[in-house]
Length: 305
Image (cartoon, rainbow, N blue to C red; front, side):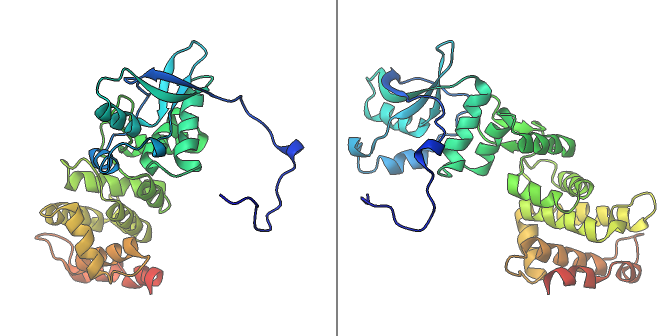
């Protein structure tokens, strides 16, 4: 630790620093303390951290939230708690740092601030679930889109650890946001066709989801089932042909066919898909010649080349 501060950043004056709350306290709590929607405890991480044994010099107390009614919930440190239980199986308590919270909304907001905003210790999905529980506006709005599209975000195996349409397949937060940027309706059409093609999959492949949303955005004729004969033909080609392969294989294969352009993965997949579809000829389907006339490759090429 340096004894001086370096750099040219203008630091706040003492009188301008707002102090929130009051200092926490150190105490022993039950080693069996639970949290609300704990992160899944990774056995590999526990094994790695105990490889050289338990080191008190590296231990920092778990953080426990204390509510006005004196109820206590684990806020941070579940991996440490499990490591402690393995090391000291007869222990009934564990050292903790106790902080006061006002309510569950405050609890989930603190989880987000501790595990993402300050040190990025949790996944985007784990953090997003707590943002939804904390009723943060942007998370609430995105949660509504998840429900509308029939998909979910998995943050934990605990009760309440899945948000969105809880019975739908999981998506990553980042991929879902990127798909929405292609258009909300286009994202839903993409999700619908992926769910139809792989009805038993519990998670949708992110880049493939974005790629198909991009196709619906660039080529509206693909999704216009009332006016376009290509729309149904595309759906039949996609669902019947691609369902023979896994989502991962389809994404990887068509990314290569589309040039596998750096930082343009979804665009590469989209180009691979539309190039293949333009050449395809289904029995009693739309002719390849007609599709090539209606679906110009230049539209997708302009986004890549």
